[in-house]
Image (cartoon, rainbow, N blue to C red; front, side, top):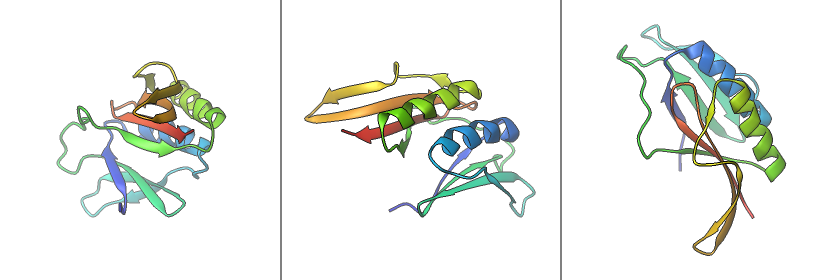
Length: 129
C-alpha cells in the first residue's frame, strides 16, 4: 500500500545517528544521503522492499511531529523489540506510552515498544503474538 514514509528532522545528523541505530537493529544499513534538488539533505533506509526517509523540511520551517501519529516497525520477536528500544534510548530517543512489553485487548495480544525520536516523532516496534 505504501511506497515510502518520510518524516522531517530538525537536526538531520542527530536523527541519522538515532535511525542508523534503531533501524540497524531491524537489519537496515546506515542511511544513504540524498540531496534533493532544493539542496536539502535527506537520508534513505531500505529493508524488505520498504523505504523510510528522514529529511530536512523543504520549506525551511521547523520539523514537527503529528499529534496522534505513530510510525510502526515490525520486529521478529520481543528480544529484537527490546534491542530496538534500547538502541533508541542510547541514541537520543525517549520512552513514551509506557515500558515495552505485551499488551492485550480487543482479542489481540501484541508486543509493543514506543519511542520518540530526537525530533519528537512517535515510533512503535510491534510483534503480533
